[in-house]
Length: 380
Image (tube, rainbow, N blue to C red; front, side, top):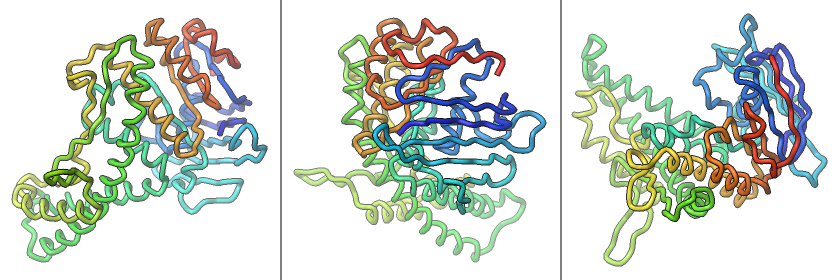
């Protein structure tokens, strides 16, 4: 798939802008602060309902405006003339409104899947070097790209987790009162919901990480000028991932994982009540990234960390392709952070993408062999 036209109204620095795009490589060149990243961020937001730069919607709306509008026409493939018109109104403090081919959608998340992107930016170093939450978000965003229904499951899990944490705090007396047995009984109900939703997330994470691993080492070796192996493995905060027998190891089923989570919640309930927080579930899990024999976090050099972060995104790109999805690849201010060897290797790895959107402050940072269309961005 590729974007053929982008139209923004009151988005970030743009009162209004329309940009015609082509398949292949599109490079936005301009000094820092001129609005290059705003363009590719808008494409990302339309595809994921999120931004790699900010957590909330308010910064996306131009100062003085009440809302922002992002529209894009998406062609499913270069061989298919049919296209989709995606529209999203971003209204801070309220639910965003989405349309597909001008027909209103019930929920903004119903737009997910119409456009799929893989974005690599300097912020991705946090996936390698940062807290477990960064690695969980990377993995969860990827599984939503594969199966958009998991956006609802992830949202439901977060909602139940908040409700359960509120009850735990109530039971601990942290809100100025001690709850009675009726609230404790309600906690059992939330335990059931959390374990069922948590098991679905864990099963999907394991499947996605297993599929991703098949590409990760290949992509890392293609980028990094060394011969170390790159690996990713799931680290569960509870023993829910593998059932080991004398001669085999197999993933637990969803029902088995849910049961393990319920048992662990029961066992740790006194501790959870004392601390007023849920200690069991996929929100406590991590992804272990390794280069050679050592964990990447704390041991990898800056160059190795960059190579691994890039390999993770390219592996995600390859995995989505295996699923029959042709994502738009976005590289936001990436080439400036890479040495010459890694630039050339990255360029070789993305040459076959249907559409690549690149931002760069210096045109010479983008390898000339990528070719494509260059856009000059100046003062928005």
